[in-house]
Length: 85
Image (tube, rainbow, N blue to C red; front, side, top):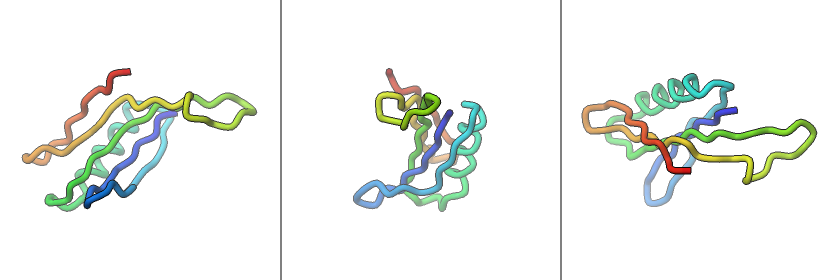
């Protein structure tokens, strides 16, 4: 499962729109659209997290790994950067 999250930075990071998808590309598209919908002067960034769910077990942090971080450049394009694992 791939989770996408938008964070709004105003002194501290505040969680904005978020969602999940079974597909990495779908999560990237959803994150891209969410970041573009924000006001141009908003200091926002996002991330894509890959999470593995085991049947019958509760999710924990070891099964979660951030794989991309996204920012909006001055031209309004969303830039993805792979996070080292």
